[in-house]
Image (tube, rainbow, N blue to C red; front, top):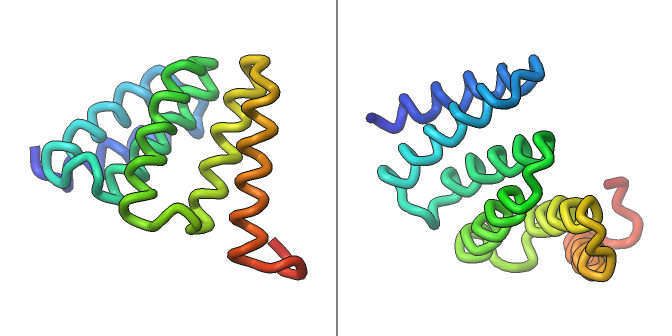
Length: 130
């Protein structure tokens, strides 16, 4: 399929996610991810965004192992595309920390939250409102 189909599937999946129809949403976003991988490759930032959205759905479905695997792939993608200290990496670390927390992996969650905090402090400073 053309990559525009991938965008359409991802957008449709977003609507189903908002409506709470998570299984439908997941299937559509997963299909869009395959299209983006075929067209742009695993390391393209757009592919990373779709993969991150899939991880978010997996978290809502309590598919924590799948979410962790997806977020780990996003980490590799965004590190290559954006660099390890980009603010998005801090957001990603917080999401991954939440997955660890939900699985009772508290030490890993703490470490990821600390790393996220360090990234955000370096990027935004102490007085930044976000």
